[in-house]
Length: 287
Image (cartoon, rainbow, N blue to C red):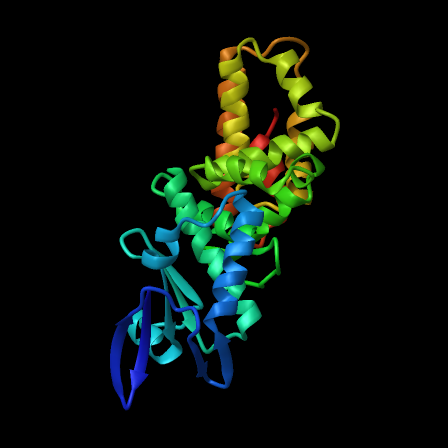
């Protein structure tokens, strides 16, 4: 357990076997590490259902004064996680209780890494997993990416009863296994359809000749709606369900639907101020 400090203008890292019993003041905030570590162990057990591994606290959790932290990162952050060294928490920006939330955020990255999903996840998913753990205790607002996008997508998931009512451990397993932003979007669309009465699922099972065709459409839908709010997701799904088809979709029909969805994604990126309804009408044309 390392502590980055600044003493008389000198930046140094002090190694500790255990910071329990140590107290310090940074920027007017007082930190009692006995309380911080006790709270961390309690929260860890609440979230992951097991005692916090001793090696995690001793070797993978570190703290730094703000001046040391900002010199190390060259920008202002509350915490940072590295696969090689573990979690490092900035002291001097938030009081002790909120700092405990930062610890959980960064330790969630560590648990994601130990789970095996961190390395294959993109940064949006990595932050979504950590923010979900932190928000079991308090919601922190983010105005920068990837955290902003991650939090928005997480809140869309939480809006869906089938996901929100699951115990944390089950929700954790679901999001920790996700690899990409598109897969998060796919999951939101699926839960949203569950909430809305399975209309999309029923349409796909009725119109698609094979599961592969249904998967192609839902993947394209997820890609097109990656950063959409719930209202816009519903708008797009409604347009998809209104495609005029009397019977089973042919392969060329599935290709045309997927092309329209990918075209919508491109149009949306090129015309950020155009209404989504107009973009959908343009992309779907005569479908």
